[in-house]
Image (cartoon, rainbow, N blue to C red):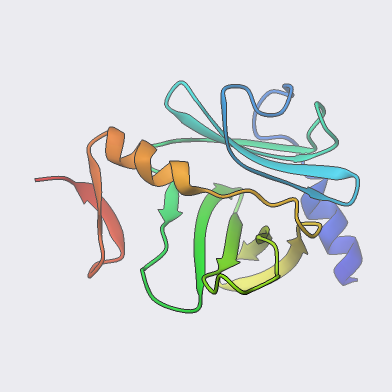
Amino acid sequence: MRTALLLALLAAPLAGPTLAACQGDEAFSCQIGTKTLEVCYWKGMLTYAYGPEDDPEIFLNERLETVAFTPWPGIGSSLWETVAFENAGYTYEVWTSVERDPEATEPRAGGVRVLQGDQTVAELECDGGTATSMDGLYDLKDGIGQCWDMDAHAWGSCG
């Protein structure tokens, strides 16, 4: 049943036009088996795409101003970040992490969690060594005049 739900969620109708994945600048990418997971920035929008290269099964758009990006809070043994996209009652939370220890041999990790409310209904992890960093998202938010409030764990206007 869980497998059927996962397949249904990942093959849900597109929430946007079918386009070649990653128009504009890549903010994150990785391989999950034969499929590609990408987050891209283009013309003030972040896009989430998952599926075969150049023919994503899911394609979501959200304005940079409103997208839920959570930067690394500056503590812990790993550097991590997440960005989440909403669609039809589901949240697609893309994550990436890497160990802070320079001696660590683990490559950068990443993946996507699919949530319905607070319930995780699917979780896919990137193939080892294929996940990229999301560092550029912080700069993009900063570039449109948003600042991260560490106490409130939220983006707001600077100043």
